[in-house]
Amino acid sequence: MRERMESDIWEGLAKNYLTKNETWSYLQDKEARRKEFINLIKQRLFKDIWCKMEKSGETKNPFIESKNSEFIRNDRRTKILVDKRTEEASIENKGAHFILKINEDIYNNKKSYKSRSCIAHELGHTFLYDTDLTPIKPYFEYPGGSLFFQSKTREDIFRKEEGFVYEIALHILVPDEYLRKKVSLLPSIEEFIKACEEFKVTREMMVKRLYWYTYNWRTGDNYWSDSAFYFYPYFGENSFIRHPKGNSEVFRGVLFKKERLFEIKVYWYKMINLIIDALDKPEKIISKQLELEKKKIKGEAIYLPNENRFLIMVKPLIEDV
Image (cartoon, rainbow, N blue to C red; front, side, top):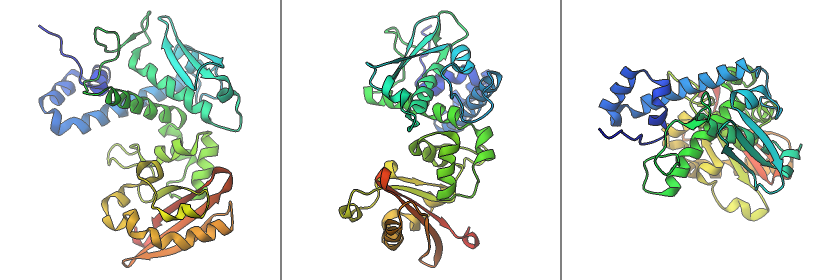
């Protein structure tokens, strides 16, 4: 009998994080129950990651601060090699261990958190492998030796694996167990900036952690569900002529996804005065009350000249939540 090949990462990991009955139930009705089972696998995977971190002594943020971290060296069986030739970072299975190469300039740049992001991301790849075996082997593969995810395009295969390990990286750097301890459930720009510094992660990683990934597995909500956040580039006056772009600049919580009234094109013009005031007072958070079709909204903005952008947040006033 021909062995069934997993159609993607989640089916490949099901045997590790689902019981046989759960897996069978999923396979009977994949289309209807897919999201439910992916979330169940994620929930158990992230709990497993945290248990491994905790057992390795990673119990204080910022996490994986040292390349000699026991979690990196022993649990993930990874050696970090700093060199000049690697463009950013890469990881390779050497059988007895992984070699994680990271660019020397990135690693030694103390003003940037990029090295931490790169290391956490590459460690994410190791969770597709059984590190209890020697030699280390992937949980699933096809005869050519590459990880197999059913797809028509090479780009889609790349996207599926890279998206998977990016999400793991965020849970390594900002575990659920510490997120609530260090970051308020009440969103604000001040709290966002503080969170980036607290966990030593880039703004791009933190905004996705707060708005994209499930925090409450029972409800499916993200951490900051009742707000929307924008990165708005500013290189001069012409920057104001367009709306923010999709997922690269716009991050919306559940409330802002559900109500069409919060579409950016609808109320962007209402925020222009807020942005102009922030431009006049760089590095200071400016707040204004906005009203949209009888809905009261609080807007916040800060202009960061050293980053060539604005950070902007909108959220309902307390009485409207």
